Length: 360
Image (cartoon, rainbow, N blue to C red; front, side, top):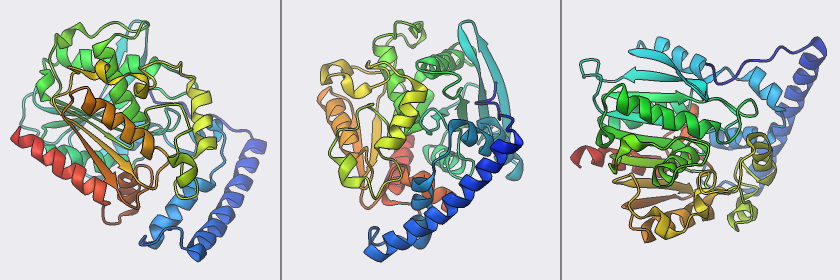
């Protein structure tokens, strides 16, 4: 099943969208000029200025967003064709769970089907599909750095068509499929995600530790651990009261208004699976990950929450590394990949961390 179905817009709706896009471009240019004038992003190349202000200036409805952006599967298939990569999609149907698709890129075509895997959950507030120019090449680079045989992207269903905890149920059934049908051992699995995808990765760990009341337990894990889990600028609480929100509101491309937009559409409950930050350090003792990496941009609104999450994981005994990206906005690495500019410091350190997994 596709992440979303592109809506059919009427002529009036299309005209309204074109008007919005024109206004959006003008607003972006005005914001770029203003932020450049006051020196809000010292040390940044112009393309970063432009992109962050571009993202800050958007004011589209979910219907318009889903019309403009292709479904996740289309972007993944297009990338595979463009770069002549070994690629296979597989639709997965499980009773009681919305149908989802796994998109497999074989980095080592000679490897066995139960070889090492990087399973990736993309960001976008559970509302937006994957970014073809950003998420896809960055994740494949992460897979190569980690030395895995295969990178698999979960094309989960987007809100509001499927709300919380639907995406977690799809992630749980993905793991069950890989362990049971593909016979992949947990110690050969690396789980990664950015923003909402990082939320999903941590929510998965929470579910393995203590099952979500609406989702079957992952008994197949049987006390085993994933090789590693990493989150790039993970979204780990629905609260927007951290000091880093007002401090970075005019630097980051996410802010309270945008987060409330995502939260309203996703409709989460206040629990440890949707908000991993709610769990105390003791909860994270003995979690199903041998190593964990979290990154936080020091110019992003999530910064304080991510730092607090890393502290809780460490206090719970997890082997956790926190990478702070100086002068970086939310998911800076994804943006830089899409822009074609040199990668940020946090992304380079994450790549080095992934390379180190080959030695463990």
